Image (cartoon, rainbow, N blue to C red; front, side):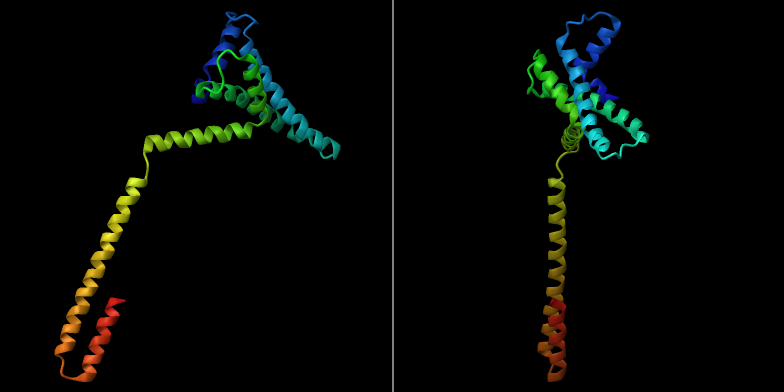
Length: 184
């Protein structure tokens, strides 16, 4: 529903035309609408043509074709609006809007990928970058490792000091080995 609100030019033009307050001369609206229908229809014709040639067309998929046509028309209406919002399409250029609508209708998956990327960027902006948290976690991890290593070094030093004072050579060798194993 929020995506429909993001398409002010197309949807407001449709509402104005349905209310009778827009003449048939609003070329950008009509070029966008018919371009989206043309692009989505062309996609379906190409896809179904292959099925008809190989005699594998199944009428059970007619409802899926209607859904794909609807998705294509909506994505064909979205693409020119997105390009208008980003400044890549100058307002008032009906022909460009129609061509972008054909492209959007034909490649609904591409429009979906664009919208998904915009959502990812928006979420990253709202949530913030995780680099600061990752750096803090890394510093904490390094501090813990340093503390553990320091404790092991202290324990090994104490064992070596005890081994140095040990008069029995065999016991001293075992104590030195214990001190070395504590460092691993």
